[in-house]
Length: 151
Image (cartoon, rainbow, N blue to C red):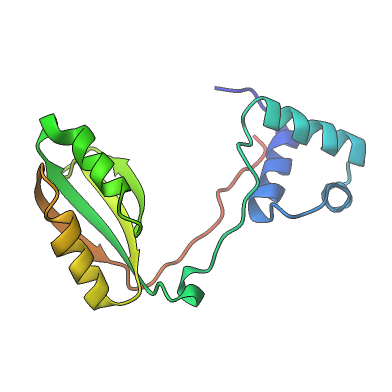
């Protein structure tokens, strides 16, 4: 685990809330010299605590209004094949190997329920090695930023 101090955590918190925030703005907000903030950010990148700066796309505005989390049980000998086939499906966004009653949880987006039904039953359900799946349609999402706080 990388060692970070209170200032690193404050900078990470600011950037995690808005990756587009400028160094001078962070500097003013946290009352630390811009050159110090800049060098800290560069160091956090070099140490791989910051992997990339990115955006959050509003999928709903693009018409992807249905999100499903699908738990899948699979033949363990077919693990790599199942994951490879799932990654070929454009609507699949994320695959997590998990503990518990499922082997993996797959996050998928579709434009409507009919499309999601077809996706799950005709694409995911027909992958060789998939033994069982159970889908959970997201009704409402509430999020909060990760609390990167000084120790």
